[in-house]
Image: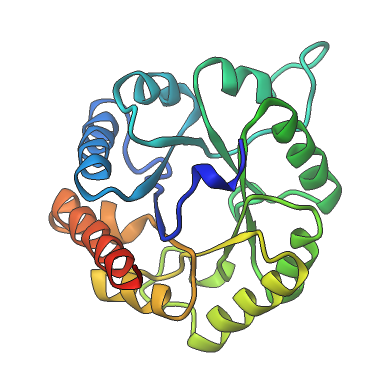
Length: 231
């Protein structure tokens, strides 16, 4: 699987573990309908036990695991393999999130495993230097997000957004750059896209909104509007 499967501008819904079971599946089903309605590439992350159900019911989403290890099938226990993710229909994986940090060596091995089985990789980077280093490893997407802003109302500042995009693209122009810190409204989504982001990812801005489905749709509408203007 390559970057052609993710059409920029794209949108990532990352409920983390705020939602589980029926609540999570209900949000995924709605996102699945919105992906078809607005013709926007939507990635939807979920905890590992939930992935199979979402894959079965949401064919319009790029269903994404929240972590993966670099192991091969065999003598290991308690780890997540790329092969098992593909088996249940997962199409992408997030690596090196602040809640599950990895060494560069582990990231490189995980990207290699993902490529072997056709999984897209979204790798998180906390700083500009880390983003540059990760870009050398050739993931599909780099999520540039300062750890200290995750889950807070403060967005990444404009200089951080533009500099991470510039530095990543200089290393590898084929890598898509996602921005994700502090997004709380459709206006925030538009701002990051106008600054050059290929995609935007949101957790708290959706799951902690008074009306999560309504907010999610407003944000996806903003992506669709930006997409239409760019055409």
